[in-house]
Length: 480
Ligand SMILES: Cc1cc2nc3c(=O)[nH]c(=O)nc-3n(C[C@H](O)[C@H](O)[C@H](O)COP(=O)(O)OP(=O)(O)OC[C@H]3O[C@@H](n4cnc5c(N)ncnc54)[C@H](O)[C@@H]3O)c2cc1C
Image 1: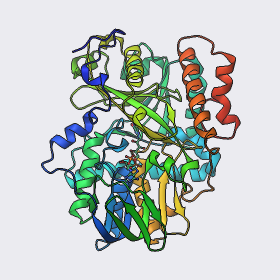
Image 2: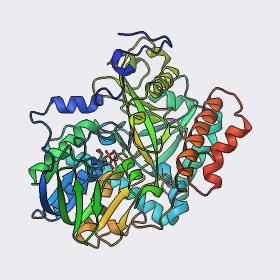
Image 3: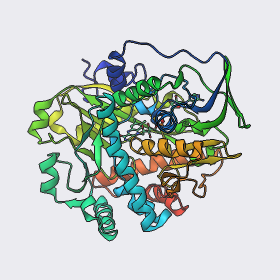
Image 4: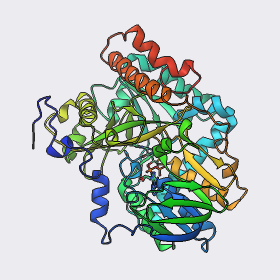
């Protein structure tokens, strides 16, 4: 084990993020006896072609084959299924009751509650999927605790709880005192908080690979190691790849942050990186701080810190740093500084774990939308469908996206396609290069502002103004 100069107690693995897959995915791949699916070669046909083999693409394939087992469905993935964020995330399948403010602003109270209920159903359905298909993805529904770590966040916490009461559902989100927060997890950084009962943890690597197995058993064709380089929508649509093409009546773009490179979608998102560190097993330490209930926990920062325990007594701790970038490059997976920032956050919140080594660290891109919430929809000429803008909260919403995209592609008129986040008025970021420059500057300002607040310092005027810029420009992002 290496003791690094900053005293973060990182092991060798965490020093070289990106040199290996996430711990979740390594564990999942170690249980499998078959390798990657072969790449696409030659010219092939399908009824529905899906680009991207993460949760969105695979849930879409799942729901398509559920509705119509005879449908020819093909998934094209540049890496292996789950190689992207779906196999690298924190495993928070969390409710949307904390998003009521944004949802009400966009869709009104009734639409907002409908959207929250749909996500609640998805969380339950993910657990049922695991039970029904022999997928042991450590699904555990123990709720989500928000922890206030700076007095500046207290009004946000209160407003969030008040909104749940306002829509008549106070049981979904309730305020916690400092003692109640610390009874669930005794971190000295926690000042107060709130508890949302909708929240389940999963081992995302097991879930995404289990989903891949299930759709393959249903006859879905998967081409891995195959990057789609072009799309002619047709109809029929033609996807081009380095060694062949895929012709299909319908195409689903399940690209997450890679959509920044697709002209049809690029102005609907910016890509930010997020990193996670993972400790060695320390179940006795978790018992000492009383964190044995399996709750998901996060703070209130925009550069959110989120953390959860694992079945073998580790803590996975994410966020706190990261960068905004124009293209999806190594900065999203190989950024050692971002790993250190996540580790610093962990050491700050869990000082009694100072001698517990951090054994792993990894990162990935998140697709930040102008509203902080995802949208699902149809592109011209009507046979291309997409989901994007999860903004780092896609584990449960991608399940819903799969239902929506499957229904849109098969033309089914269901309650799901009438949800307000299906084909809403497009909200766009500024064109490049302003989008990337602006995102990079604002992201750094948000981190600086929130760090100052947490350390009891007053953030500088310029930093505060820059951090508030997105709200002033009408985006539902960052501090008010
Ligand atoms: C570090 C981190 C932590 C996170 N933590 C959480 C969390 O705890 N809870 C939560 O809800 N969300 C979390 N998220 C977000 C969550 O992981 C995503 O929202 C979710 O996985 C989105 O699923 P997806 O299938 O849309 O995207 P992805 O899993 O990214 O799948 C998209 C796939 O498309 C492929 N692709 C892209 N371009 C092409 C192309 N041209 N040709 C072929 N294939 C292509 C990519 O390789 C990728 O596999 C986190 C994200 C990160 C990075």
